[in-house]
Image (cartoon, one colour):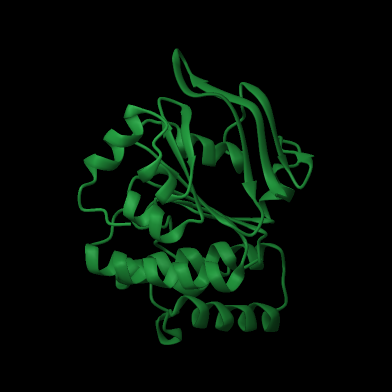
Length: 246
């Protein structure tokens, strides 16, 4: 299957701590892949490597067959939307200004920006009458919707989400999960989601990549991991989330 993003032998360490062992991984174009595993397993490190916030110690990352490095990182990031943990909105900017940040930096026309903003408000179900509020005046769910709009503003080919719903209460989280699933279905773009929640991964992703101690333990559908675990760890990880039904 065609893949926009590929890793070949990519590894990363911090001091004497190995965050990611040498890893080969392709992300199928147009599908949603969930990176899941316990804290410290390497999933967020892998995501930051993809967007060139970190440089690999060894190996090669390619985006659309072009190697990702510090020289072309800025250009490639314009083709990648990135939603960080807890949204990462600037508190001194309104929701509108946060969402339009990169468009204004790139000097897009006011009409183009306004039209795109209206499209994204409808897509993310964010109320247009709240665009002039500051992050502190928005609910947690609304802040995440603004962060998603900012990530989608330039119509990226790839969307990266790092634990985007982790800080939300269960009811808000459930509503956003449903909305994200519909957004993924409508956009049909390559999406990579980092989560520690197997239920969320099973609900949102076409494929799950389970990691532990910097290694890929198993990849496949939620049913693959449940019914055909590759190791005792896979079974233990799924059983530890007893409330998960998939």
